[in-house]
Amino acid sequence: MSLITPDFGLLFWMAIVFLIVLAILWKWGFPAIVKMVNDRKAYIDESLRKAQEANERLANIKIESESILQEAREKQALILKEAAATRDAIVEKAQDKAREEGNRLLAEAKAEIESQKQAAISDIRAQVAELSVKVAEKILRKELGDDDKQMDLIDRLLDEVSSSDKK
Image: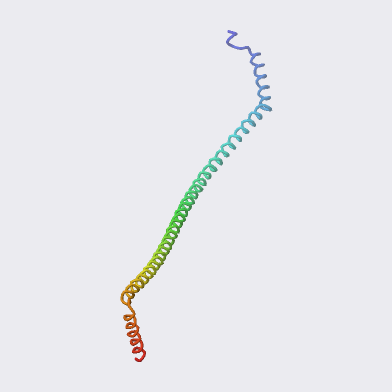
C-alpha cells in the first residue's frame, strides 16, 4: 500500500517545494507571463485596429477609384464629343472649300468659254467680212468690167451723196 499512499514526510516536503515554486513563480514567473499575455493582447488589439484602418482606407480608395474612373469616363466622353465636333467642323470646312473651288473653277470655265465664244464670233465676223469683200470684189469686177459701167456707177453715187448732203 505504500505505493498508492504517500508518506507524511513526502507530502510535507512536496508541499514545501510546491509553495517555494509557487512563490518563485508568483514573484517572477506570473508577472512575466501576464506581461507577455498583455503584450500579446496589445499586439493583437493594435493589429485589429490597423486592420480596421486598412479596411477603411481600402473602402476610401475604392470609392476614390470609382470617382476617378467616373471622372475619366466623363473626360473621355467630352474628348470624344470634342473630336466629333472637330471632325464635323473639318469636314464642313473641306466641303465649303470644295464648293468654293468648284464655283471658282466653274466661273473660270464659263469665263474661258465666253472668251473662246467671243474669239470665235470675232473670227467668224472677220471671215464673213473677208468673204463679203471678196464676193463684192468679184461682183464689182464683173459688173464694172467696162469703163462705161464704171462711169455710170460713179455718177450715180455722186448724185446720191450730193442729194443726201442737201437734206
